[in-house]
Every structure is written in structure tokens, then in C-alpha cells.
Length: 254
Image (cartoon, rainbow, N blue to C red):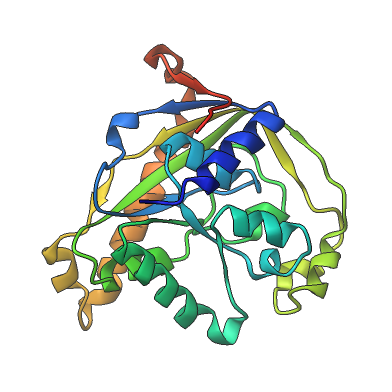
């Protein structure tokens, strides 16, 4: 039985922020097996937004500093997030934690753009290059059934509550170059947001067979690009979606 506390907290946070959430293409959400959710990322609200849209707990990988900052650390812990370790242990520790979760048929969430769009203000439809770690995770895991689910978060109305210097984050993670730039850290609050579920990618034996030797890099690049293209396509066509009769999710009792 999954722990539903992070999902309940997600709904409570969205209700507190008075966020109107609309989910599209819900029929694409896998109902069984292990899940790796891949999404674009502009706001700290993205974690509760995706969980509420999928209506299930998702253990998101989050930046190292989020596990160090007082209060914020408590929030991400209650949301079930996995704060990344310092660079020296980061990859090995996360892969182990994520692999264990996938074996338990949990959902793992990854923002492959990294911290850059969180620290530097970006437009709602913008999407930067993806890191490839999620593809490696999917192909290395020995969980029997793994699906990668691309998800696009398309903000329709928002406000930006900038309130502390970016440089303050270097106190908690001096290894991150992004934290040495001037200016205030953006905190985007979604007032109305669409979550568009992309076409799932089922990891097959053929994928794993291709993840060997010289072909491994090509396989990882192919999956990474497929997810990036799917999310970019969804973000570029939000105007066509209101005719799909979306379901509003503002607050839910569990």
C-alpha cells in the first residue's frame, strides 16, 4: 500500500495557493508497473502539480540544497522527494535509491533540465536541453516493467514572487555554479496550469539489448530526445486543449 501522505499534501499546497489545475490525456497514465515521470521544470510547485495531476505519489529527485535549507527540507521530505547528495556521491546514491523504489513499483520523478530554469526566469513554453540520467536509470533498472512518462507543465496564468538573493543558495551548496550569479531567485506561483500527459515509453527487452557497448550511448540519446520532443510538442500547442473538457483539480480529501 503506497503512502498517500505526499499526495494529500500536494492537494493541500495547491489549494493553499489557489491553483487551478487542469489535466489532459489522463488515459495515457499507466495503471501498473514502475514509472519514471519526466517533466519540464520552472517552479518549486511542479512537484505537487505533477502528483495531483497523476493522482499518485511521485518521489522526485530534487537539488542538493533543498535537503539542506531549513523548513524547505521538511517540505520536500514530507513530499517524499529524494534530495541529491553532494557531487562525489550523487550519482551512485540516487541510482540506488531510485532503483529500490522502482522495484517496489513506485513512481520516480526527474526534472532533466536541472536547476537552470528554476534559477533563471524562463517563459512558460520554453524548454532547455535534457540531462540523460533518467534514460540510464530506466535502462539499468532490473524492475520487470518500467514505463517512462513524459509530462508537460504549461502555465496559463502565474505570478513571480522573487524574495531572496540567488547567492544565498551557495551557502548550502557551494558546488553549484548557478548559485554565484546576482539577482533574486524567482518563485513562480501557478494560478492556472495545464498538465499534459505525453505518450508513455515502455522499456522493452529490445531497449535493454541495445544498451550495450557502443550502441548504449545511441540508445540513451534516442530515449532522451524522444521525451524532449514529446514535451516540447505538448508545450507548443496548448491553445488546442480547451475543447477536451479538462477536469479541474483544486482540492481533494483523501
